[in-house]
Every structure is written in C-alpha cells, then in structure tokens.
Length: 446
Image (cartoon, rainbow, N blue to C red; front, top):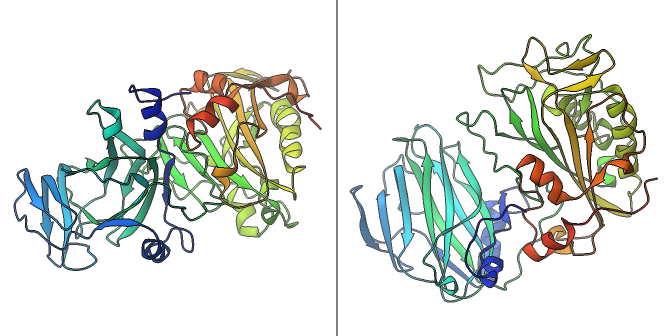
C-alpha cells in the first residue's frame, strides 16, 4: 500500500482520508447536504462576517474563529459566487487556514466552490492537522478537486479524525484565475454520515487523477457508467473503475458502436474504431459491455475507445473474458466493485509482438490487471468492506499464449500496487486495506 503519513500508527489511522465524493443529486447534492447539516452536529463557516478586501496575507475574524487568508480576500461583488453576502476568493496559490482547532474532530467536511466570474478553471485541495499527531504536520485529505463551473458545487470529503483538528484549503493551479470558496461545513467525528452506495469510484482514485488538461497522462474522465484515468500519450486508460449490480443488467443488445470519445479535451488525438485495424490485437473493453445492459445509452458508453486497450485475442476473448463472466455470477445476491487497467509496453497478439498501434499513437500494454471486490447487496458500501471480504486480484501478460484459466494469474493487490505505483482501495480504512491487500485469493474460479 502506498501511504503518506509519518507520525505514530495511531495518528496514521486517524488522519487517513477515505476520499472525496463528488456531489450527486439525491446523494450528497447541495440540498441533501443541507439536510444533513440541520440534523447532525456541525460547524459551518459561511464567510458572511468579517472583512478582508486585499490579497496580502492577514488574519480575519470569522464566525467560527480567526482564519489566515493568504492570497485571498472576502468577496461580495456580483462576480463572486456565494450563498449569502460574501465568499472567500483565492488567486495564485491562495490559502485559507484555520488558526484554531475544532474540539470534536471531524467525520466529514463539505465545501462549496465555483470559479469567480468568467475566470478559467482552478484546482484546490483540503488539508488537515490533528493535534494528536504532535508533529505540526498537514496531511492532504482525499483527492485534488478541479473547479470548472461558475455555479457553486458541493464536494464532500470523508475525514474520520477524532480529537482536535483544524483545516486548510490550498489553491493548487490556475494562476491568476480566481476561485470562490463558500459554506465550509464540518460534521463532528462519530456522527453517522449518509450512505455512499453504488459510486463508480467508491473504492478510491488510484492515481489521484484530476480533470485538468495540465495532467494529460493522468486525466480524470467521469461518466455515469464508469470513471477512468486516461493517458493521452499512450492512447489508453491507466485504469477504469465501476460498480456492478443486477440493476446494471437488463438484456439490452450489444451496441458495437466503437467510436472516439467526445469527452476528451479539444486538440487531443482521438483514437478511433479503426486504430486497431489489422494489428492482431482486439479492442479490449475495460468496463465490459455485458456489465452495462440496462439501457442502450449505458451499453453504448462502453464502446468509447477510451474504454479500450489493445489485448491479445487469447487475453481478451478467453482468459479476461472468462473472469468477466465469472464476476457476473455473483449477481443478484451480491454487488461488485471493479478496478481494471494495464501497464508496461509490448504484447504479443495474433500477428506477433508489437509495442504500439496507429502509427505510435496507441501503446500496447505488457500486462493487464484487475481487482474485484465482492459484497452482499446492502447500503453504505465502504463501511461493509471488512478484513474477510473476498477480493480477487489478477495480473496477466498480454500474450496470445495465455493460459485460459484466469485463476492461474491471481496475485495480491499489494503486488499490483508495487507494479503500477497506484494506491488501490484507498478509501477503505487502513486496517482493512492491510488485511485484504496482502492476500491472494484462493476461492473458486467458476
């Protein structure tokens, strides 16, 4: 497991962030979050009190206490996106830092954010400091957030820190483009949170991908059907993550409409349905077509070329395909979370060995990997993953002489992390990760 703290083990467990969950209607949307705040023990900073008209660093007395504003002001202009009379406005590498500790810890933090006026997009991060650490160190909570709209959006971070804690917001990209932050809300540690269910990225963001053209090798693409990190220069995804239950399957025919993905940024090379032609490699799905048969739209979305990787036919159609079919046998009594990807360069297809396709624009991976987490159907999915949850991890060579039995290629999550540099299942509590990521599955294979 790739981990980031260097305090005591106790502090490591306390400071571990589970993740941020993008707001969704009916599940963490701004209206739903307001309902939570009205019934749970919360601390909320509206930024409507106090005054700070200039950008140089200074202390500001707000309703919750004093905060240090660095390269930031309290804005009340029509271009400031706000609920109420004011919002914090950050430029350059602006920061908002609590000068005080919250005494009741934090179960979660919710932040409203938007771009100022017509400025360009910016990214920002939430950082935490726990008094129990006794090391005066800040720790990043969850993933970098990319703000792309002038409409206030809510992002929630699961924190799970007990005892005294304070927070800092750091603007991390966008330069002179300004960012509005409003309604910073903290729910006390131990207060039950709304369930997070069936989220395609519930297990975590393995590479910390963000939707920012400045990160073309780790670009986050979010679709209703799956989430991925795309690598522009390889022409394939680094990984794809999705949730599967019986509601995702309903007999819709396979659409077979392989095509370029219009969600990629303008100017990026578009891999097309012909990019793999006569190469000896299949257009191999990461999120399978058969995992999305509930509607034509959902099935069609699996045929975007961003969801494909060059796979040796024996890998794609036989070994990998057998594992896909086995995964669906857990339905309807279970739900499944899957993360799949590839790494390395060079594979052997039906026409022999190759390192790239499409005049070098698409990399042929050397290995294909997948991690499958199986849960009984239920609510609040992440909290139901335990040290005894069955997790299947495989790492296969991209070779046309592959063994048909996928069980032959079982490995541990830890081993895949070591090969890829990713932090898989990072939203799970550390003690659960330690238990399940080191195991090699020995269950049935059919």
